[in-house]
Amino acid sequence: KFRFSLIRNARSVCLAALMSVGMVSQSLAEQDRVLNYEDVFELEYAANIEFHPQQEMLVYERRSMDVMQDRMKVSLWTYDLKTNQHLPLLADEHSYTSPAFSPDGSRLLFLSSRSGSQQIYVNWLESDRTAKLS
Image 1 (spheres, rainbow, N blue to C red):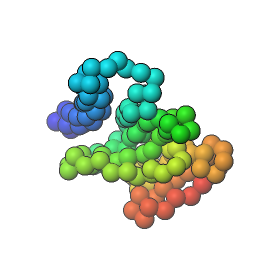
Image 2 (image 1 turned 180 degrees about the vertical axis):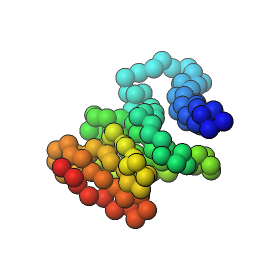
Image 3 (image 1 turned 60 degrees about the vertical axis):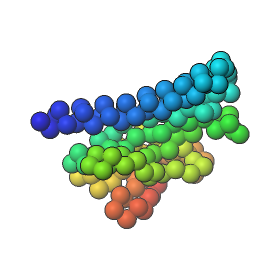
Image 4 (image 1 turned 30 degrees about the horizontal axis):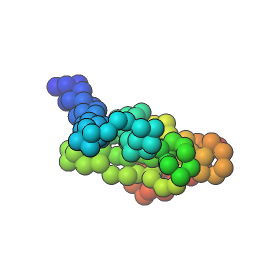
């Protein structure tokens, strides 16, 4: 039962990501235009999904392109498996990748170059405090 629920929740997140891509393509079809290079800046998608140890939520990378800096932008978002709510966890001008929960689920490790070079950070989820580890 638990494994089925886990698979169903993962499928719903993937389905939501695919639906958002589908809406973009439907919008383009309604406008009767072809996909252009600039259209990539309108796409957003989920990647690198990490389940919380108690299976109450998951964290995922929300990827998009920054048109002004011509680079990939990656933020970390949470998805509550009970309420089906998406919320930003780390989403600002920096990119955040490779989320990983601590065994007890109280902390989240991630990579970011917010200090100028790629470093390992830890975020205490309850207090929303972050510290650089490397």
